[in-house]
Amino acid sequence: MDFDLPEETVALRRMCRDFAAKEIEPFADDWSERGHFPVEVFHKLGELGLMGMLVEQEYGGTDAGLVTYVAAMEELGIADQSVASAWNAHSTIATLPLATFGTHEQKQRWLRPLATGQKIGAFGLTESTAGSDAAGIRTRARAEAGGWVLNGTKMFISNAGTEMSLGVTVLAVTGENADGGKRYGVFFVPDGTPGYEKGQPLRKLGWHALDTRELMFNDCWIPDDHLIGDEGNGLRDFLDVLDAGRVSVAALSLSLAQAALDLAVRHAGEREQFGKPLNKFQAVGHKLADMATEVEAARGLVYRAAWLADQRRPFGQAAAMAKLYASEVANRAASASVQIHGGYGYIRESKISRFYADAKILEIGEGTSEVQRNVIARTLTPRF
Image: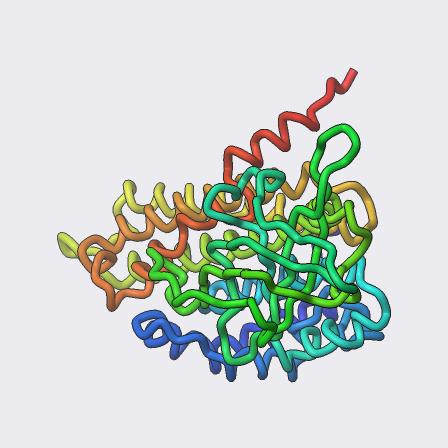
């Protein structure tokens, strides 16, 4: 076994660390307080070739693979979770349906500006009555006049309302099969399409600088060539790309856990009580040791899932395990870090308070912890 990252991945990770230290970390607290989406950062990420890491070079991406993507996510997420979560949504569920199932024309038209960072992408799945139950969506697409008419509402959608948003990829019900089961389609709805409206930004517990909104489709007509993949296979197609999204959120969780650990180690070495630094107290030292151990365990699961994907081997179970464990480690690490910071960790001016607020959504988005456990349980088989 070789646990060393490829030389080019190490170089890219170093570039991401330098970029994050200069362009993201110094401004993250201000963006969070103002709820500001930093468009300029994403254009710069595009210039560095980081907005299409999972997209073929033919369409403006770098096709770097999931292992290298995870390494980049670690550095961006340590600087700020809002920026990293927007990058995650764009890089996976927003672009992969187009990259995997789109036609050449669709890729040239929509995937290229996404992969090069000219635009940012969004994916509309979740609804007020359907989240974990993806098959329970109610948004419908009706074939009409050489196109499709969409009606419905999507909730908690990231990246749809920014200055650089290209449009939204939407999962909708297209009809029923002979056995009564639903048929689904995936559609691309560009910004400015009549009948497509966006709600005001939602006020969230964390991820304050991430644009998150409700989207409404009222007799929204789009041409036939806006259907991505085959009509009827939309849900299956979405689930096919979901595993990569889970690895990405697992990497985002890993980055938060590492950030919480780094902040706790720094504070414990600088803060004195009873005449000595906090890290000299066994209770604090053991807490740091437990955090560090769990972070390394999470890192192993995340990179293994990414490696399996890059090897074109089945990685659904590994992705679910990585997402489940890393997201829960992130929450434990954030809580422990706040405890070590004491009162300083509970004031808004402290960096750890921002990460603490950001942590909870990691156990919810891209499949809740309960859903991940269901996925894992279904894949378990006896070894003999």
